[in-house]
Length: 167
Image (cartoon, rainbow, N blue to C red):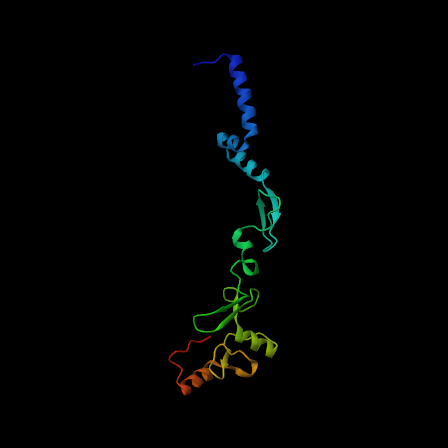
């Protein structure tokens, strides 16, 4: 069914007003990459994440973090337990994300204690040995820095080499 020119003009004007009032549908109808890009870039507010410092665009002016994962990490997590985690080996790990020898944002507590005692970072080949064998006893007087070979000899003497993993 064909419309008269006047009816088509009225229809086009109403459709244009409706599309301008609903920009998402307007961009979808245009199916143009340029229109979609323009809509995406102009309808979102530029922002910088207060936690990680990353630039992001958001639809809310007051959004502080770039993602929920970023917002709920570390001390802001609802599952935060003070930053201490007990590993499967029986050692304690402390939340220390900017440490040079970090593994997954956590560092072994006995290594941190020994580094603080020595006043320097430990090298990878240096092993911290617990004198009394208790992995949770991280007092400075119970810890000693040894080489890998000497550490193996210590555990061969007391017979605990079967269940020991190197850290």
